[in-house]
Length: 89
Image (cartoon, rainbow, N blue to C red; front, side):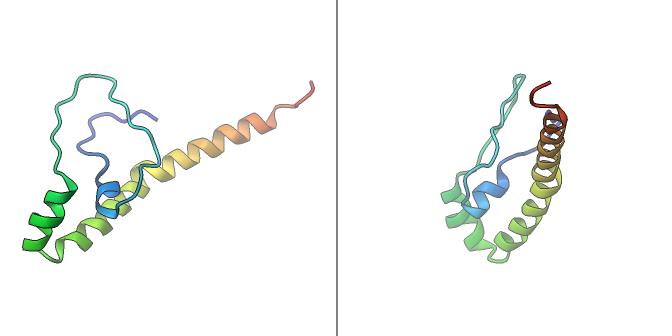
């Protein structure tokens, strides 16, 4: 899937300590910045204790809506289309 003008990716994986389910590739030059997981855990979340749970819930819902569900649907569509072809025709 191709996404344009996206602000951020990978936030759910960092906050939930999970491996990425998808590969993300920039097709053009991008400007980025990153916060390390150690900085988030040891500085930000210690100052704001409720922030981690709030961010985790919002990033998970965004991840489901913007990435996982559309990719799963596209995968199912492709498999269905391929399965409709006759194997020995």
